[in-house]
Image (cartoon, rainbow, N blue to C red; front, side):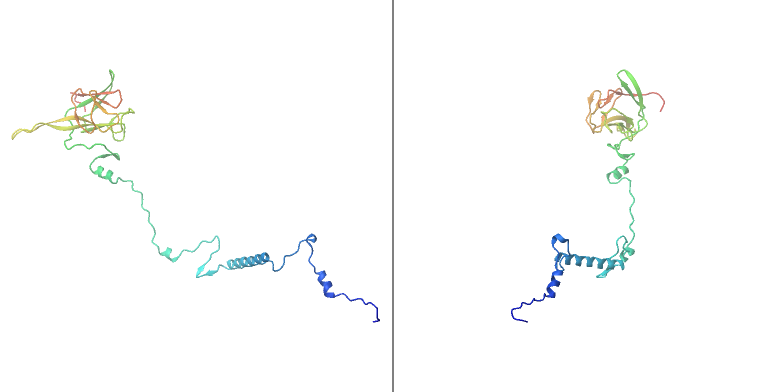
Length: 251
């Protein structure tokens, strides 16, 4: 070239290409993240792992240390130990009496499944005299109770066990018992037999409102001998029970 003449330097082709491959600005639109972006790498790894696990499940499960992972919704097959196990037999409910109730039943101290508050003494006996209880309210006679057909009569509100059903709310479920007992009048001798009389007694069974004999409250758990024309009252009931003997031949 001639001296003093300026020559134009040719542009570098690599430089122009780099300009063409420049990344767009934020205002020119979105662009992909860098290949080395940690978030992108982590997402790719997780996606690959999940797809691999799903492929193994589709193939029927994978084995890990000799154990098969089953698909969701499918029941596991029973093990050989369960097949050899003996069947469990459930015991049926036992509604019989047990414990103290069973003991009381053997001694005759249970009636209709209810434990009685008293036990008849050894000298209990059926009366030979036809005793009656005449029930009064004031001057009016309400009813007559025949009380000579058995050795004891339980009085109270419990209809399942009581012989004399007294329904006043102040009366206990098992309130009192009228008990016939043998009473030795004379010992007798070598020739004569002892004279024995069956006599009625009354005993309160620990009632809340008490039992009254001729107006006086008696102690509980104690027998009181009854005489003809004695008057009994139970709790706060206004009814009076007058004890009389009957000469009638009815039973």
